Every structure is written in C-alpha cells, then in structure tokens.
Amino acid sequence: MSKLTRQQALARLGAGVAEDVSAYQALLLLLEEQFDAALHHRSARLAALGEDVVAVVEAMELRRRQRVALVRALLGAEATMAQAIALCEGEARAGIDAGWRELALLATECKRRNQRNNDLLTDQYTIMQRVLQGEDQIYAPR
Image 1: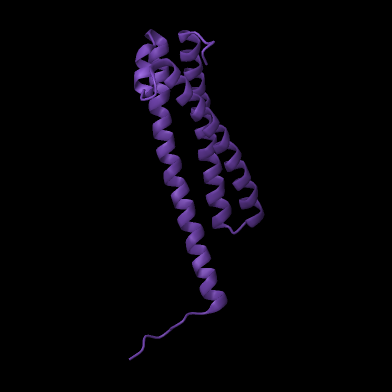
Image 2: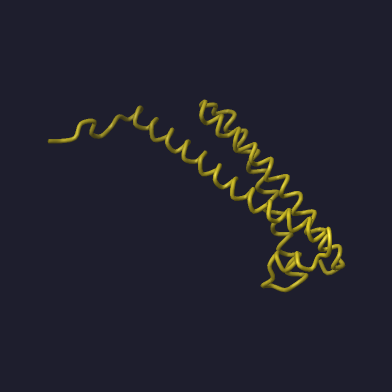
C-alpha cells in the first residue's frame, strides 16, 4: 500500500466498491435461484448454487479486506469509509459515494433474501423430520 499515491489508493477504493456492487447484484440473482431451487426441492441445483454463492462471497470478503487496508493506509487505524470518500473530489467523490450507498442497500437486501432462504430450508427440514419420524404427540393429552 505504501507505494500507492493517494489518488491511486482512492481510485482502487472506487474500483473495489464498483466491483462489489456488481458482485452483490450477482449474489441477489443467485439467492433468487437458490430460493426457487429450494421451493422446488432441487437438491443438486441447491448444492451448485451454494458453491457459487461461496465463491462470490469469498471474492467480496477479499475486496472488503483490501478496502479496509486502503482506508487505514490513507487515514489511520480508526478511519471510516466516509472519511476516505471525503478525500475524493468532484465526480470521483459523487461516484464512490453513490456506489457505497448502493452497496449498503444491496447488502441489506442480500441479507434479507438469505434469511428468507434459510427460513424456507429450515421449515422444509422440520416438515421432513416430522414426516420421517412422526410426531411425538399428535393429539394433546387430556
């Protein structure tokens, strides 16, 4: 990082945010496919999608670590992305700021869809366990 100029570091931050916006958009699509596969009990497709999701998330995590390192190199250990964005000027600032805000919205939506998918899979598992093992008490005792 020390070999980068301030402008290069800020440009990398902007590029990383843009890449993550695209990655989150791809993740949204994967989560929709995952929901559909779970809804229709397509286990092979679920497994393949799980691998795709992991690959996207791992790449985003790597970019997140790089982003944190760049921000810290620019402004110190306690610096925030908002402080780094404030270092940008003009269109570059507007672009990275808009990307950062979009990234936050996409992350929130991905979390929501992931939870929805988890709930569906958990419910399906619970139902299957009841079918295979039976209910402990089908009728309430008197």
